[in-house]
Image (cartoon, rainbow, N blue to C red; front, side, top):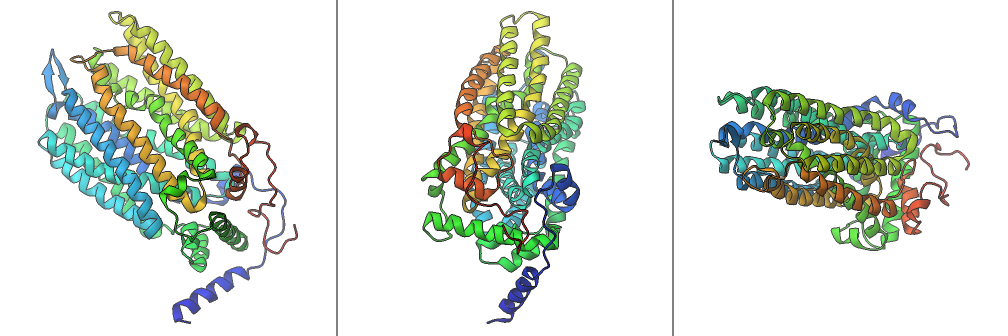
Length: 517
């Protein structure tokens, strides 16, 4: 036995010999868990830097009007083909980054994936900052898109693996809050510069983009590796140390470590294969149902009109609204998104994930229906205001629709396939986003279809269809451990029975080691 192996064995023995805490049949509430795990909350915020970066990057395009647009009838207009290329290829890059992020995260660890994302993002913003032509600007967005895909996939994987059960849903839904916060930061810097014609109007915003990879670099050494990754790679002692660095109560570490090891071994036994898992496993047996759910959840941002809302300032310019009113309405809309994300974090603990997602889809369908009706009166100033107002009200949908959906997507996959399943989900997300980002400029540009508020009918129709699909396919995962979810998917429990289904196993997350069942 080598010295390193002896050290690891001794550390594992020291951890597992910890005196158990007094037995308590009742798990902590969500708010108790929040107070007991301050370090985990900080690490979850770190993991969501990718979501901040994504929200920020999506509004950067607004400030390129003066640099790459041309004045048409007194309004800056970017040719639709350049908008489509910028949006589409950036999303394709994010899609590729999501897939690559799954490989890196599984092979080298979550921390290495964060490091790669930070390096790529730094390079991408450097190219964007120095861009003088649309082609160079496109190259920068592609590089940054790769970084976003890796950061987003790794972030959700990491959050799902470090958070205790009472916090998992809130922590995973924080993706939505951070994305909206990124939008707000970008809007606060960008919108006052919409009327400027100097280079500073857009270069200041692009330079601000270096903040996000800077945060990833700055705190990376403080972030522990995922215990699930370490156990999957036969490093239980390292996993115990990671749990310690996460601020876990020492008395609970043996029980948590046992659960992680047991879940990993049980999934490997069911798969009847080695610990190496492939993307094809996501489409086999019960995992295919899990993958479908993840794909539905990742389709929701586009179904509720994300590509429409993030292009809101440019759409309202094309619709004839003044810059001052556009700035006011955009910031109000993003504030709605932030408020709904915060409110969702609480409501989700009361009503669960499934109910909120269905409510969000119903709300989205209703708002876009009103917008479509207003779009039938294109020459009315009142109708223009209705379109603008309901476009901003649509940000309210982000909280109830996307937040709980991202929580479900982060919970339903098998543990050994989590990085790959989430990579597939984000890949599909950005494939779908690519399609819409190609289409959108042609729908609302004044020199193309110029549909205006009639676009609302498109998203109202998609929302109605998705509501029906989710009603029959989306399960309730609130309060379920990974072991319980494994059993329910293996037993093919019906979607609407998930909430009341009684699992056969005694769950161990809050039962200290050594306590009789």
